Image 1: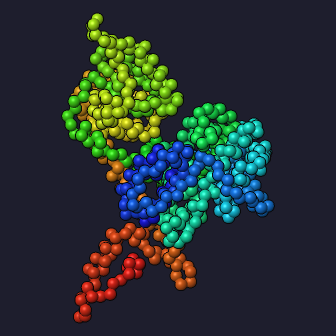
Image 2: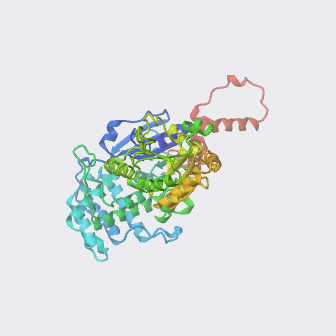
Image 3: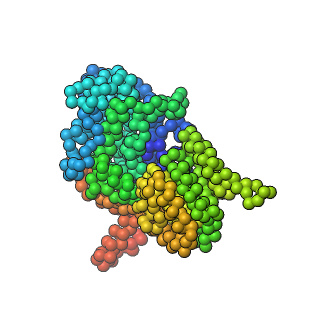
Length: 593
């Protein structure tokens, strides 16, 4: 089977956020061929290079999203008129309403607005394919004027009507960046050519929403290629949680600048409408959508995804680095709490420090180890604030007048002498604590579960789904509840042992790489089996031959061998003649038919 793997800012780049997961998937499905279509997110990502690719990766085609290249395409009068019609229709849909109404039943979600958005989007895509690109058109004054006409038209939202010229320029710039995949040269179908585009694959697998899924939508539109969309972090949710504006302005090297002004209400409304509509169209056209947890699944349903298309597939994680800790007897200090993860405001370490102050009043021997690196400039500032708060809440304590004081709270990073590896960090803790107020899939909790550790977590994101009754869960931003749960486990080692054993068993059953790869292997076969017609298998009249090549035959070796054994079992007795090893060989292509 030939799979088009669509990524944005991830695989095969070394610094890709989803690179590890995609690499495990590709290596685990060695019987398939993967053609990688990667959109890079920054200049430094391309400079860092690629990961080592396995042999089943047939080709890699890349394109940058972080810079606008000049395609040199100057449209004629007819093409300019067609662009204005499609772009103004797209803008009109954004100005008339926001995200799709999830209250509409799934079977009737093809609403007039959704159809208008789709027609405008695919109209722009067809124009880009026929003319060679839309780069200049999307950055032209005509695009800004079309957006302005849509904002000033009767029936436009009040927020859209309030858009000023700087707001229109900002929205037009964001739309130009979001629609850059329309101008790529990936949408071709050169038969069996090794450099053929998305028209030659059997299945498109988008590893995120947004731009990666947009390339899959175009393959679905141009060639009817089935689309599988995987979202471990819902892209639309990420947009809503951000400032709502476009990416910060780029510097001379294409990397985002550090400073960015907050987006105006009109900018936030129009961009939220665009991303909402694009997500809804992605969910509508996808053959299958695989959220990474129930929390992401609820977001997808709220944004218009049909329940019948949703299949939850948990992220696969390597359990082997933590196997030794999980199998070994618990030798951790019984009064040590450990928190692992990035340092940023969303992790709410302030509440954790206040909770630890109450824990110390109940258990004076308790210690807290905060292990993790700061995330960006905001994270570094937050880390400094947390250090000062810890120094105020817990002045250095000494056992006597001639001893050096010691703070019960330590801030560390993996690789320090006291924390050489993640497994060592988890092994040192009696209880693992998570205090976040915003969380997607809690990777740190799964690692703690692999190590057989009891956990105390806040009820955010997919925490409850992951824990599944094998740890204690408290409300977020509630230091007292967090402290009470931690004290309860510190005082009850038998309960800690029971919860840790149950957590490890659950993690090994649900969250390993093996279950993740097996789930996608089944989905690949299922989706291709539902669309087995190949555009290259034609009869003498040039018409497609449905089911001429069954979907199973796309897996090399296995199915052909099974078919041969079945034919031999039901074959009649051999008539006299030359021995079978003297028979003429059959060509590989003929045998595959």
